[in-house]
Length: 270
Ligand code: AMP
Image (cartoon, rainbow, N blue to C red; front, side, top):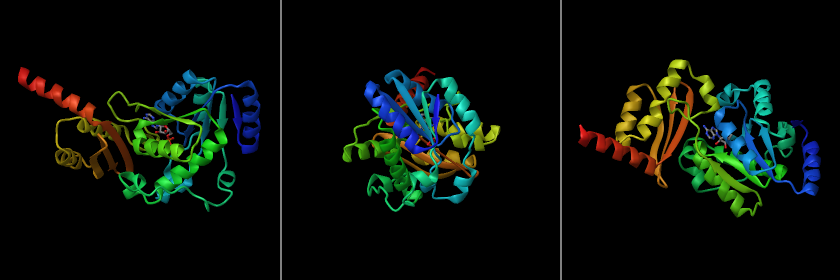
């Protein structure tokens, strides 16, 4: 595994790979790696000759300075995970190199980025789209992998790639969950064991036959603060705080409906 912390060293390496006509897959992350990230890497490894993983905690996408300072950072154990997963290349960029322009140039989308998470996190998706465009340009990958856990982010990136004629194919990977259903997230590290168990309610309720209002009531009774809970584009989306930790999740409505059907048939059997 080769580690690059200077962009020009990576760019030289990428140039050499071109001569050999090898396929490159790219997985951008903010580190504190878990099985969700690993699913993206494994898909990339299956579909490409080499995989590049970047770790960069991107300050421009954090609208809340406390969230940025408390974001888990664990480079040493991340590097072990990357080594064990067998990825070929790791990019560890510095803020000064990524934002040599001090964020003068940015990508702004003015429709989908204002809904759901965007309605509550001002400037968040500008930060995400800007850093992802920079990283995609640096990686020059054939394919890049994004998780459905951040479905709105995946949609925006996929639409950006299409509308800026990027040649990297944007691929989605289904959400990886803990055994209790909680969507894996680096922020779960900030929850106590008890809170992790409680947080699994989100996924269970999202798929239940309860109305959105009933789901919200149940969560609030258990101490969650629901930021939004809504249906859009055939999916149910939620963002909710447990203490100071913000959790998001989403499921396709067809999945929710399938559960509703199972619940109904169990009721008629009883
Ligand atoms: P992050 O490090 O949180 O910025 O995530 C990097 C990538 O991993 C993004 O494309 C996320 O959507 C994806 N990801 C994070 N958690 C999960 C998960 N539980 N399942 C699938 N993909 C995930």
